[in-house]
Length: 446
Image (cartoon, rainbow, N blue to C red; front, side, top):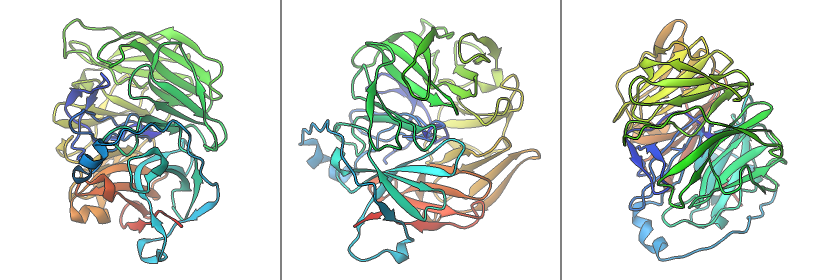
């Protein structure tokens, strides 16, 4: 998922889509599109920014500030899916790049669940859908294969247009939420992003967020005003990965009449038939937990997970979960070994949501945390409970934000960073030794 998950978030603000998302210093994207774990960013009309989520959900990638004026003069309607050749694209380190190749800038990285496959959303440099590229690779990033991005329209000030989120359950089956106003449109591919088709979960409803397991897709829907300022009728829907047999149930969450004291992240967490929904009502935080695919829930009180807008949950098994909790300008991270009944905070230093860092749960007992700027990458283990500095991304040596971090095992990983917070300068780096050293990866098309 796009970035699914994982962090780089901070103080909540109301977006022009009406969602309350943690806001990060995205002078340059969250994402969180997708690890699908999740990563949300505030998107405001005055300063377009990005959100990435490694299983990531909800993102826009902003134009560099110096380029915005000229692009804001254009009104571009481009609803046609861009057809892209499925021929391989060679990947190489920057020093090995061939002369004459056209550079492609990575915008978002998204891991395919339970595999070493990664999708990269990139741009050839303009703010039009025709410049978007969707590339498929493995975590070693030795070669790339072109695919077709979902149908999007241009949106002023962003590289990613009206694409809100995208994630893949496996190499073939992927899902994208598209739309600048409500209701949104859900597009589905069942052939590895060769083609996409439109799917309706509930007529007139907005697909607010979704997640996948090995066999099932779960989505949260709501009936929202066109500007997204208000929503009602929240439901959790489920379907096989074919996305053609939907059933839904009323959401178990409550709603406070008091502004600013209630929230949930719009993205369910799921592993197999187990489903978790985090909520921050007035008072202690709660999690609604289901063992039957969201048909029924029981309420877990989780006071340690107090946050300004509920926590992002990342399950790595039926019992092992990680939590990412924005607490204002800072964020705290936790893990659970009992399906969310109890939580332990990870060993961490002060993590600022505006600091350009990223949190990536990798296994049931291991996660990686980058604090952003020039800080080193830290490996976090739950048994023993400890944090170990492992290395520094090459781009972090020049003060960068980390907008994507994907480890498919304890050693192999990819990172997306933005030197100087400039999305037009995005760089992809890879490691094969657990983050001790990193190599630049070039995306190029002839």
